Structures are given as C-alpha cells and as structure tokens.
Image (tube, rainbow, N blue to C red):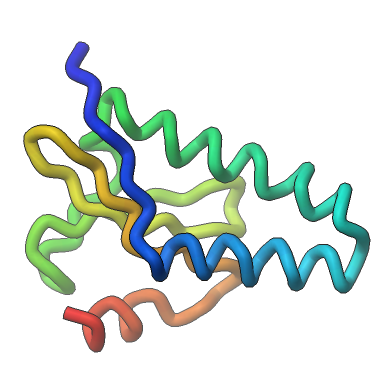
Length: 103
C-alpha cells in the first residue's frame, strides 16, 4: 500500500491550536490533549489509503472531506507523494463557505 507524506498547512495547525485552547479553557489542558492526540493520529493515518472521505471538487479541485468522531471535519488534498491537511473544522462550522472563499 502506498504511503504519502503528511503536511499540516499553517491554517490546519492554527485550527488544532485553537481547538486545544478552547477545550483547555473549558475543561483542562490534560483533557484538551486527550482530545487533540487522537485527532493528530487520525490525520497522520491518512498517509495510507489517502483517498478516503468524500471528493468535493465542486468546492475546490482535489478537495477531500472526512469526518472524525462526528464532531470534526478534516479538509485535505491528496497528490502523488503528499497529503496536505488544509483545515480542521469543529462542531458545525461552515467549512464549505470557508474553503470556497480560500480557493
């Protein structure tokens, strides 16, 4: 099975940090890390079987969307050698609008 390099865009990194900060403020830093670590592991798992999720070429060419635990939407692009995590949207954010504007 082909393995691709995983790259978090600066925006995806910011999304992850913002989610951590929100959970840490609402609960605690250990609880925030306990939620963030599986998200990171899930994103890294996209290095194999990378064409998972749903293709959304109607929003942006090459865009794929996949959910994580029914609360997080992961937006990513797959190329021959790389998976680029574009954004991580939590809890009903308007990911379609944001991604269409960023294109």
